[in-house]
Amino acid sequence: MNNAALFFNTGKNLKEFPDILQDVQEHISNKYSNLISDNPNEQKDQIKSYISKYIMDYSLGVEGLSFDELVEKLYSEMAEFSFLTRYLFRKDVEEININQWRDIKITYTNGEILPTKEKFNSPEHAIDVIRRLLHKSGMILDNSQPIVRGHLSNKIRITVFGTGVIDDDKGISASIRIVNPQKLAKENFIKNGTATEEMLDFLSICLRYGISMCVTGATSSGKTTLMSWLLSTIPDDKRIFTIENGTREFDLVKTDEEGKVINNIVHTVTRYSEDKKQNIDQEKLLESALTFNPDYICVAEMKGEESFAAQEAARTGHAVITTTHANSCEATYFRMMTLCKMKYDINDDTLYSLVTEAFPIVLFTKKLEDNSRKVMEITECEILPNGKRQIHTLFRYHIKENTVKNGKVKIIGNYEKVKDISKSLQKRLLENGMPLSVLESLLSKNVVEEGEEK
Image (tube, rainbow, N blue to C red; front, side, top):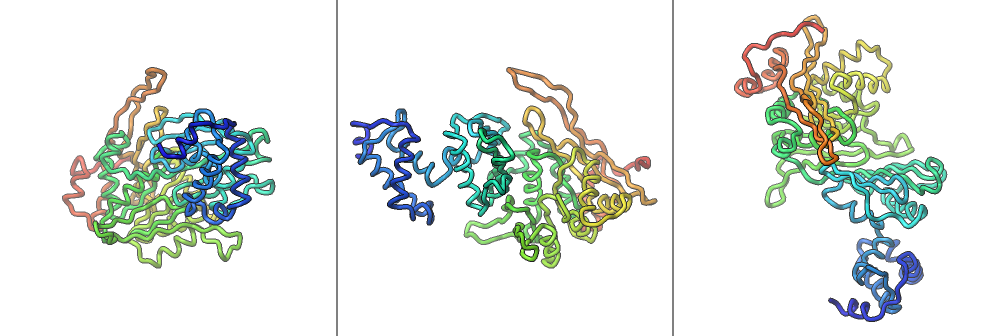
């Protein structure tokens, strides 16, 4: 126990934490305001020492908090983000959802959603903390801008609703999405029941040999995590160009023991500006990507006009992997058509032909009621000799039973391989350099039966 703590325990002037916080804030802001306003992270030890001295000088204390705990809590309130700080940088947290100032739920990587023990002191306190978060990305929350989207770092996205959109007495509502820093290996997906080894090998081999694909599903269904793993399986000598919107989630750079980069990655992220000349969106990055001579292009999410450029790139020889929001594999193509129309008003039949040619493989991911994430279906869209399209289900997850045990839902099911890839896709893979032995490993029989025209 340090000397400060010994002194602290001898005769404390007990107060409520908000009262001490106000006293310390006034003291620091009057005498040392530049420490916090300039760069609080670099001045952390200095700020803490001033906080400690003030507490000791006035023998201040809070019931239930040790000296060190009080200093940490005061520092967090003044220079960081209150009790949110401890959740923002944990490896097992995916989301922080603030429904109102006294209702905060944490979504963990294991699927659990639990309320925090802590809450903000008041609606005003919640607004103050979230404004500090938004300040990191240069965003301002006020009456003129009651809805704000920003980011705290490359790994944290924030969407905030303020006064005017929600009730004044609720303070604020916010969704803070944290990119899971843990990189999952194939064994993790298998162990978690996300997919079988055969399914994962099929997807990685198809991407390796130039077959474009789309990962579809709802938010938090595991699309980005799975796509990140697929990209990590590409040989190191192949060039990958990634495009992300606002926040960079991918980190695909590989280094050896000496820190030398051993693969070939270009990571890019959009930059928003109200000045159209300065605005850099996904479409502009995608157009620029083609000049980098990439072997693979990753468009993190198709959600706007970039969708047309993405399908154009996929149809002109580039391997493109992307994600979008849709309720099934088949619905994905109609979602793509809707997005492409944001760029050009093309008739539905033409667009359907374009997007199905561009992305032959679609996989649908879903977060089930028991919080498990599954690849529910993998499909191939085959182009028949007469130009008609036929969608085949290659793999599927069957739900057999939903049970409830100790108040928790448990889903029981199994994966099934439904069909081999078409002869036309087999031919294309061979043309793209796939060894015959590798192709044969994907097939359950030598001759693939042609399905009836849809």
